[in-house]
Length: 314
Image 1 (cartoon, helix red, strand yellow):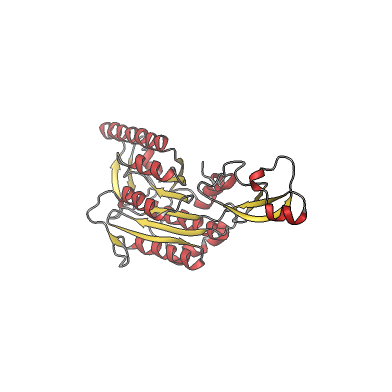
Image 2 (spheres, one colour):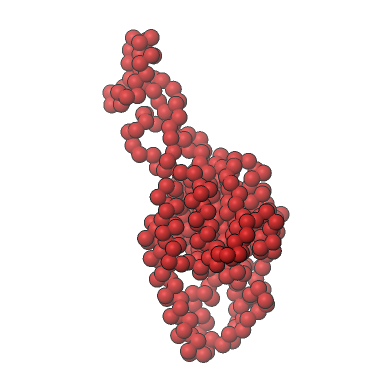
């Protein structure tokens, strides 16, 4: 029998306390990286510019376009301008709190894990000196918090996460989306309007609502931004027990299934295989890196293994 004592909600104080877990993790520093000249190599930060740092004496190999002619004339020797890569960038967190995330067979509801991951990433981005914003959404509403480099902006995001995952659709400041059935696609479309070129975007969802349009929307975001998908899953969604009756936690209480039913098992596996193939193709065509978090996992531990050089999930 599966454990149905799953954590169903998380409070604002709990999300704030995740600062302690986030200290073991690290996103890239906002401090600029010194480079010899502008235009020598393409910046890994898509769409970012170069800021002037200092002038030094010309060295063989320097781009002559970087010569500071005023200083050269004054000092009677060639001097070159040095630039710093602009590393501060907006970090946009798309967090799905739709109805399919109100589920778990173990650990915590998927929507709890999604809120925890978003909170951890928000704190990390703030400490790295980046601007932090988010789009919190479900099947009925969507709340946009534009990126800003202030602790207040992170706290506002956490408050939105805590409120919306407890009372989905009742945030008075949220924009109604009653005429839209796919919250994920609308959030991705909204992100195209909110995100500045060169943003770091994390899409946190179970991706059960993936549609024929999702891949194209992800790809459009990824063309001018660095986009990662973090998929939240429950073990039961991927593999059923071989036999026995078991229960899972849902929004209306425990739901019981008979795993010994052969037809039920076959139908389940067909559905899972079809969805996995569709999702794999969606990520492949969009060029978005994807990783998985289980409801049984500690989000901080999982993020520690996923955040590689430069803070990239992959």
